[in-house]
Image 1: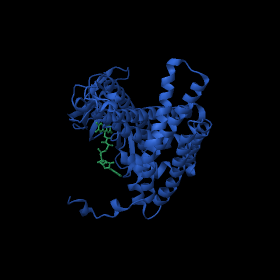
Image 2 (image 1 turned 45 degrees about the vertical axis):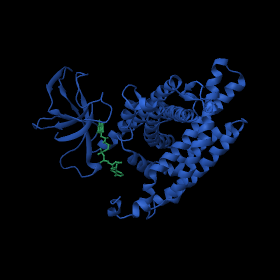
Image 3 (image 1 turned 180 degrees about the vertical axis):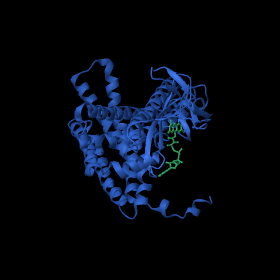
Length: 414
Ligand SMILES: Cc1cc2nc3c(=O)[nH]c(=O)nc-3n(C[C@H](O)[C@H](O)[C@H](O)COP(=O)(O)OP(=O)(O)OC[C@H]3O[C@@H](n4cnc5c(N)ncnc54)[C@H](O)[C@@H]3O)c2cc1C
């Protein structure tokens, strides 16, 4: 094997006795492009037939990146075969490297979405605790009373809105991840081979990866805001969560790559049946919600958003196959994001339905505020965030071509 690769996570460390690198490479003479790529296993130490460690292989770390965050993870530049002695072992068949790599990559994409959720969840809980402890400013109701005591910042309307917005995304993403993971588990448990279920799971993958990465970062960013100046210091962990989370929309395929995959491959999969399954799954929840008086108006609003999502999917899908395909791809990321927003509304409404049913049955008093919180969170998301989503959907439908039609030189000159 010969070559260099930068940005290798944990490319070198001494936490394990050996490191095995899966490496994409082309066998001499194989065709150019991705169809000619194979995958090899390249160990740091060669392994003897009796499983003991043998000689050091000719793969070395030539540098470690200085990064914005994730300082606990060594991101290495690796050089293979500098001495012409790097051994790699073919994994699977020749020229099937991309397919094999994507098996791992799809899993990694789900886990990257999960990272976004994990940072967001931790950042939210930190911000919530801080907002209960930090005393600053009078209650708005006491604005005229100069003698009134200062209150914890959780009493201030803007802080409450910020916290509830964070809670909405964290809760929605948590449920969405479990849902997607369950779809993946079911594939592994026997439904494998059912083309529609596979296509459905694959449709969810770029949304989990991209949406949860970007919204995870957004929640971390909002957590800094709740902390005020303290959030910008290293005295509290939220600035680290934000820096650490910033990588998630970049590695394992950037936002732009996820959006291209979503528009070009996923929404049309199985002749659109995978996307139709998503819409039908959502409508099962809205149907249940319509049976509950307090949730019925939320279900109606979600129905409106779902129907608009179906419209814009057709509009952008058609455009992607027309001579204006570049304009369609310029809107592919907002399109993925509005789909994610609709999924958030769905998940939160689903939580609301379950909570309403629990409350109606008479739950333990200590659980009441938890269930009420779920209903309020759904109400908040659907009655505030989803309005912005509808506006963004209009923009996707409009499909403004400016980004594509503007001459390259015109990007300069501010
Ligand atoms: C901390 C860290 C750890 C990493 N770990 C690993 C690892 O362990 N193994 C590994 O193999 N890689 C790893 N990477 C590499 C990572 O996957 C890439 O950085 C990432 O996929 C983006 O590729 P790039 O850096 O070459 O950016 P580029 O491809 O140069 O992208 C730059 C911009 O152009 C856009 N763009 C590029 N091509 C297209 C296109 N065709 N269409 C539309 N938009 C496009 C991108 O979306 C992006 O916005 C790591 C990177 C980092 C920063």
